[in-house]
Length: 308
Image (cartoon, rainbow, N blue to C red; front, side):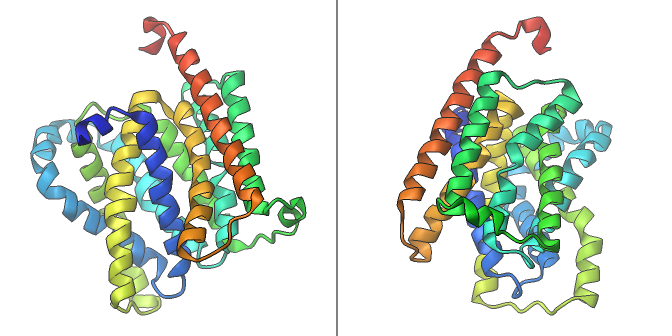
C-alpha cells in the first residue's frame, strides 16, 4: 500500500500541504509558548531519531555518495531544512496566520523563478495560467471574499522572516532535481540529521540567551506532530513528488495549503464555512488541475536527449 502511494505523485503532493497546513496552524497556536529555534531543533532531531532505524542500512550504503557530494547536500539542507522552518517559526511569533497563508501562496511563482535561474526551466502558458488561477483562489479565501481585506493587511517584521523563508524553500525545491543519486530514505535521513546538526549552535544560543522552554503536554504534542507528520512524512512525500514530476509541475500544489488551513480552522477551531470558501476552493482546485494537465503535456513534449 505504502509503495503504491510513493508512486502516486499527485496524491503525495496533495497530502503534503495538508500536513504542512497543520504545521502552520500549530506554529501560530504555540507562538510565545515554545521558542522558534527550539521547536525547529526538536523537530529535526526527533524526526532523525525516528527515521534512523529504518534508514540506517541506506545511510551506510549511501555514505560514499554522501562524502563525495557533501557540498550539494549541504546546499540543499541549509535552506530547505535548517533555515526555512526556523525562519517560518520565528516569523509566526510576530505575524497572524492570515499573513502566513498569504506568504505561502508565493511559493509556486518563486519556485518557477528559481527553476528558471538554476536550470533554465520555463513555465508553459497553461502552467502559468493554472498557477495564477489557483493564486486567485488563495486570495479569495484569505480575503474572505472582500478585496478590502487584502489592502488592509499590515505587514511587520514577522512577514519579512516569512518571505525570506519562502525564498529559501523555493530555492531548495528547484535545486532538488540536482540531488545526488542515492536512496530516498538515505537522502531524507541525512538531510534531516545534518539539518539538526547545522541548527545546533543557534539552539544552544537560544537556550542560553532566549526564553525558557517548558515541557508540558502541549509542548510534547507539538514536537510529536512536527517531527512525524510535518517532517518525516511530509518531506518524504514532497521529495518523492519532486522526483517524479519536477518542481514546476509540483509547485501549484502549494496553493492547497490555504485551502486545508481554512478547512482545519473550520473543523478544529469551530469557524463557520462561507460561500467564499467554496469559491476559493473551486478556483484553487481548477488551477491545480489546469497546471497539472499542461505540465504533463509539456513533459511529454521533452525529448529524451533534452531531459538528460
